Amino acid sequence: MDTIIEYAPLVIVLIMFFLQYKIFVTPDQIAEVKSELIEYVADHYVSDKTYRDNHTSLENRMDSIDKNVNDVKTLLISIVQWHGSTNN
Image (cartoon, rainbow, N blue to C red; front, side, top):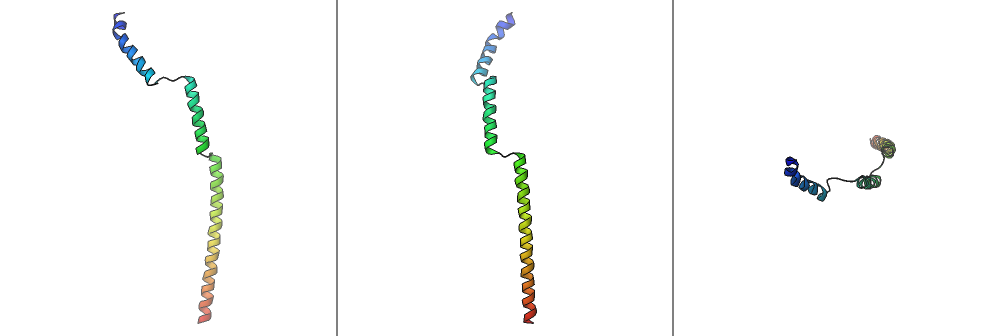
């Protein structure tokens, strides 16, 4: 009993510290933060499926652009070679 009385002021100070700095939270507070976090993630990030679909679409478009650039390059080379052969 003497030890309880001896440490009671320290326990009261610690409890007041925890309450003042909101170390302990209630389930309602956790649910509120969870819902805010879910809304934030939904607003600022895309789903993995959407990212993969867009990435695949972008890869296909880049491949098409590369093919078109190669076709233009081949055409320009053939034009330059044709003009070079007619000048000789």
